[in-house]
Length: 311
Ligand code: PPE
Image 1 (cartoon, rainbow, N blue to C red):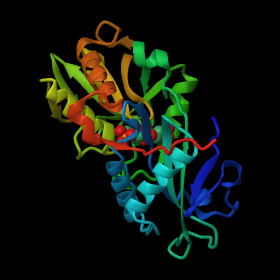
Image 2 (cartoon, rainbow, N blue to C red):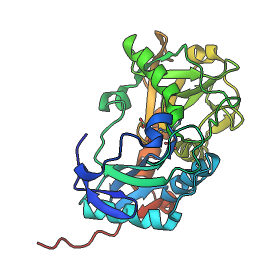
Image 3 (cartoon, rainbow, N blue to C red):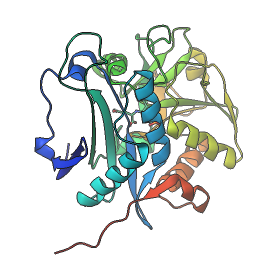
């Protein structure tokens, strides 16, 4: 991780190394936090945050679902994020807002614990590697099922819920694969450990529906819009595990990962074993949108005003 100068913590810009918490912080013990992963790109109109408002809205919804009142409005967080990027002199970065139960009480009743908020931003390259983005990654179906809606809230981006993704990630990593694919409690294909999933068969793109236990990915939505704008048919439906092996193409989307082709699942090559035509077309248009190169998706960008450097 490449440190920057400042982190925003409860309304103030503090030095990176001073953004610390007490060891008895509630969220550290019970995972009582919600977060976002957001990216900012260096575009022709300046550093621009991709679909910032949607990320702020999801942060608010995740917080509400876990009964945490964020003591700042989405607009205040939006302004703070932009100022953080400018103050750190960043042009492109990954942004991590986190809302968590802080220090003061212990035990499972959390409503008396304070709610702390922090935003960090730093340069973070390709999540699954540059080569993965180009040539595709090798994935394995994890033996861990995606969290069930009977036990947690899959649509919330909550810290504690990520222990599920972490178990899946460790399992496949130890087995020599780059990414995990999780099935849901019905045995349907659900997600990657930190990405939504798309399967292409006979030119039609399919992705698990909102009624599955997916995280409602912002890049999932963008990739659906882009694929439809390119003229592809996109359907939201349940996907059987075997379809991963029979698919012509498979790809993943997420903020950290962006759009990554999957070239193998469980040692079966996907299609030709190389990123296919549909994946390449959607990936190229998606990259253009992220980097602000497409007028049509210009309103997905929240441009950061960078002050002239004072020397
Ligand atoms: N599913 C999960 C479980 C998930 O964590 C993410 C994002 C997605 C789908 C895609 O959502 P979206 O980014 O809105 O398109 N994962 C974040 C955290 C990754 C991490 O390692 O931390 C991310 O990509 O920022």
